Image 1 (cartoon, protein in one colour):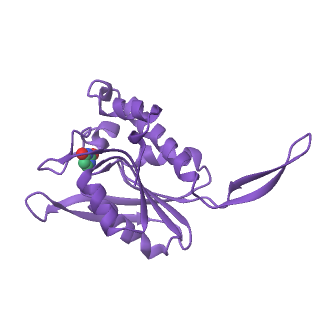
Image 2: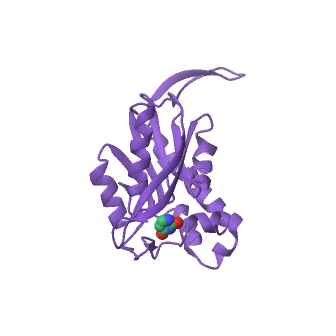
Image 3: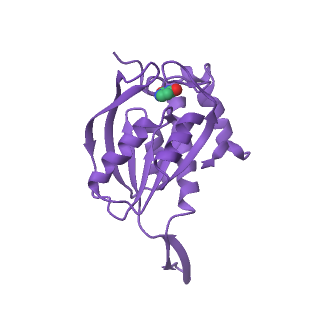
Length: 214
Ligand code: URA
């Protein structure tokens, strides 16, 4: 698991601003900070993607350089994942894109919700690099459902799971249930409350980015 907050970087400033209840009042800034984290994750993940050598012709000569072999497929769980997705897309600008509609359904125990999915649109992902993003990995269940739903469209060569904040339980769940996936997280928080919100977390990422819903 790669955790941005384990190193000193500007990513920690973006995470701090995302959590700050005063700064959260500015919805545009909240979305933009998620987007900026998406850009940082894209850069970090790009270091591990297959590369190929390409000779580039400048107006003064030629330069052999290493470039990404092929763009990834970016997968987002609507609606909260959209700003993080946009950040990834800002860097992986020729990426293909998949969208999943998921929501918390009925409780399957005192603390847990079942995750319902009702919409999915995706290209073929056979042999591709898949990057699934969800800003808040609370229980890890929606990521697991999303990943298995994506396998209908092929078997990816490699899968990255990206989240701004994960609970310890969510991160462990993803690691144990999807050991073939690589997890990239901004920060990991210890607790989940009785409504499966990450504590201290930041609140409801979808509401903070896009407003309250009925
Ligand atoms: N989704 C959120 O937006 N916040 C959480 O803390 C957990 C899930």
